[in-house]
Length: 241
Image: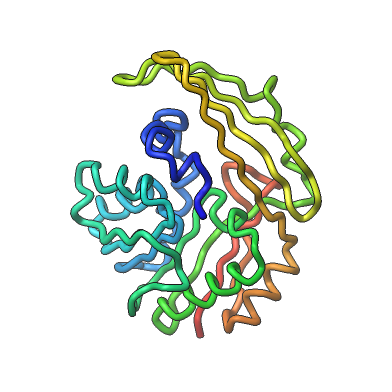
């Protein structure tokens, strides 16, 4: 099931305005160029920001996400007709043969259930052509990123055209490593509605991820540093032989 921030129509509609700086996606655009990818599967495409960036470059993109509300937002954006949108998950994809599979932002960590994670990796493997690549990022658990997830550090008030003011903040709920649960709260100034969204992320270490990739048939080619979060995230580059 998708978290409320992705699956609730009112929250999905404000997801992009609350996080307008998506420079974190630039390294993935560069990797699409690096691997000369002409066909890309974007797992956990959300509201379609990355998929549309690739489509703007003439790349054939399939975006898959379990949250219908987020996929609806993606489909409503200019140029969305150039992307094939699928509401679902990587374990139930139609036959594909792509050059690159991506999972940007927190997608890999949001797949917290071990069995679902294995099925996702297997789905990515089967969607790739031989020689194609899977790339994704995950936070280094040693850095304990959740230490700063609190109201004081995250509280913002955003003015969104057509919506009004939205207050938002995050609060840590539980740390039971490798699982970390937190709650986002949203207050809509127009009518006072309060919505919350609980999320659980799984923090996997480098050796664990490499072992899981190898078990699904991948060759781990590289583990890079995230340019936007140096020293805090791993960026895995795996290849289907």
